[in-house]
Length: 384
Image 1 (cartoon, rainbow, N blue to C red):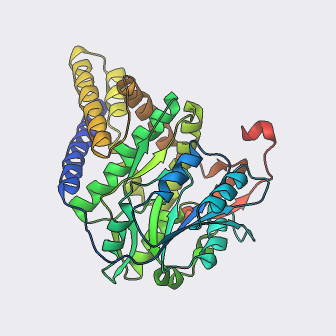
Image 2 (image 1 turned 90 degrees about the horizontal axis):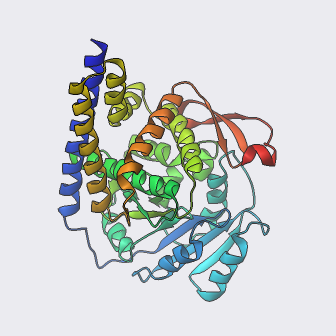
Image 3 (image 1 turned 135 degrees about the vertical axis):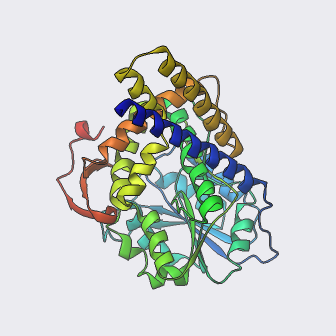
């Protein structure tokens, strides 16, 4: 009986992924919105250390095909390794400015920087862009078109991945494209649900101010998701663009990938409802089928598992390519299996753990991913 339930769970998950892939195709076949209007956009980019290909990422923003934007580079202090890179870009391009963090109102270091950056921004549209994010040249034009609707308070971009040298970076980029980016487009197409991801989210300043500004989220770990929830609750419309944002991950280790999603597992469990958390486990179907085979070994279940593996690899690769994730390379099939096994562990961990390790600090996470306490900073050995 239990084995049958596991097989059914796996099949339901595979069916959901097939439907999601169809929805991704439908979403991407539509022509992106275009407009001749070019409202000013302030790109807020909190930096922390030297991310992979940071200089190339900033060069991509300098090359954006849009006449009216600025890039504010947030740096905590002059000792940060990103400081000289930011200074070079400010000297090279007048649209770039460096803003040093002035205060730490909360426990979320990214939001602490946004609190400083927002008052320095000149424009009414504020794009929050991660330091390792890269946009295609025409992305801002689609975003501007979506904001022509005055009811829109936030536009987010589906996440994809770009570049990798290490196996861990391949895992990261593959999951972001086939898991998160595909889910964003699938939810939008199938249920008109807009999943906000902070890799790239553009906010109407008046909508953000209605929520209390970034200060209101300074102790929230999943600030992007909660901002989206609060905007919707206050009557604002959210939109998912068609243009992807690329997560540039080149040299991430497999351990770093695992640690990152251990943190995300806790974030997701505290930010969403229990049914949503359980559903997230269903759309990782291979571990359920593998567990069924372990409990009831046999040729029939082994054949089912093999078929499930082939289908899951095909779906992941197809979704990733649709979102222009690349290059994937010859290791991709093995990467899908490793990724899914590690993500199953991080998903389970979210039901039992309420602490995360982030930038050398151990933080406790409460409801809606609110940070409710912190232990002393870790030693350098613990932080690695």
